Length: 136
Ligand SMILES: [Mg+2]
Image (cartoon, rainbow, N blue to C red; front, side, top):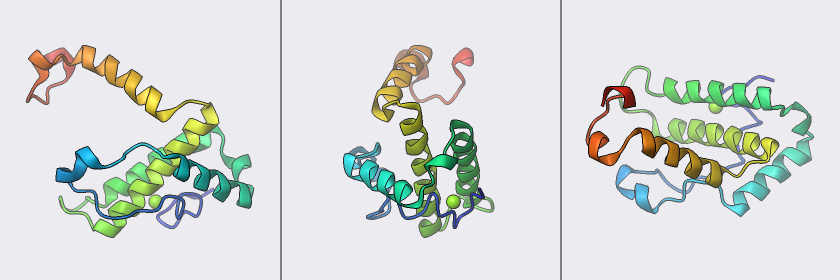
């Protein structure tokens, strides 16, 4: 199953309503809504693609799509907005599919991991620094 910028498994399932700018980051819903989850389930069901969505295939697809997202910035810090949106949607789509396949809630695992990361990066040592936790 090829995964490219025109990958039908990942495109079209996540509607975008505008460029996410840094100044809006606090007001943008990042994690999936029930509406998006249902649209994605229906999209896959109609095409009988669930049979291809093993955890390994989905994990590979996340990495492939992340590479395509990175490619948007290959030759500069400003990526084409439309292409960045498409690739970000592809990454998120495969993340949602993998979470559903594994039976985990994205909100829950992100919050759980954030707590682990907060332990590694206490505010008093990490604030304003980009160093790895073992170099703080
Ligand atoms: Mg893509």
